[in-house]
Image (cartoon, rainbow, N blue to C red):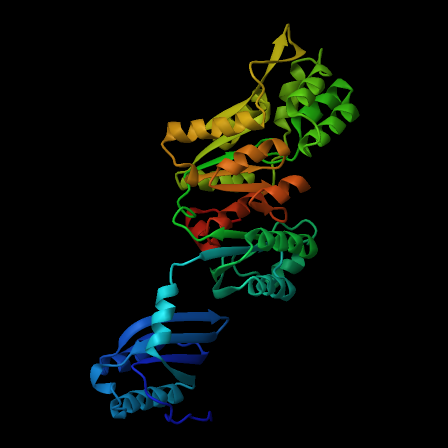
Length: 431
């Protein structure tokens, strides 16, 4: 039998009550029915169940006749509750809350609130310990943790090759406070992701987070797991030379326009028929189809803004249902690649301009735009979008972009927007 704590604490108008034990149907109804008999006002309430273990908390205000130093009614209320919890085999504790403390707590609501999202294949205790340690070190408090990913079957894990598994795990932390140095905070989280094979996104908890309306993607090494110009170069017999230039350009070591023209010139004479074969075998990035399909169901507009080629962007547009595409137009004469491009090159600055243009055409605020890319030429559009995400990006891009995902697939972006697996299951889509 559990020990019952006697009601001896000083009575306050406001009392916090905490209940733990095994979850059972009708618990909230039975507790609040007792409170209703005494006319209690509910100031706050919360409940969490992990497996069958319940943690239930409520903040109540006693009726006027129970305050002002008259503790008899308050004691009767608490004793009735305590008897009920004892009969239900639940543990119970309570604590008076001073009015000044309550008012201070109320005054803090809505101020400097953030969402911290932890993404991993498997969330570990070390990851949570390190993440929560960083938040505390920067003067931030975690007041709520929720799991966005679904529960995992350990039996299914045994049947799956972990190296090939695309499973995802995600926890969302509600955080408040004022970090004196947000750049240092972000750098600490970025260093953590390298150590623990996890991603940490830290965003302001604003109305725009779940109300974005346009998502723009880089194509090469973002929507697809390849650089198309490198694939064309392999077919032209100059793969190694072009790949080296591409890597340096994406790292930001070379001027994009100059390096693009240099690589394109090496493709001169390539037969047009090669393009169709490459398009048919473009390797889509993990989660790309799920993400685009879900965004379409939710009414988002989508776009490809690529420093690659329109031939392949159109192929992806038809395959995935993308709304807008902008890329470079290969110049073809007599069925052969001329080694030149038609019109202006779609470089970093052009991508940012196109993003703004599409948003204006769609009547969408830049705060409601998400941009996703991996290379240095994506940084301008990542910086003008409300949410810029460096996806499996080059080191320089990860350090510069506000958010970064390297561990999971593209569909994990849905977690950054606050969607849970339960939300996505209702649409028929899961990360």
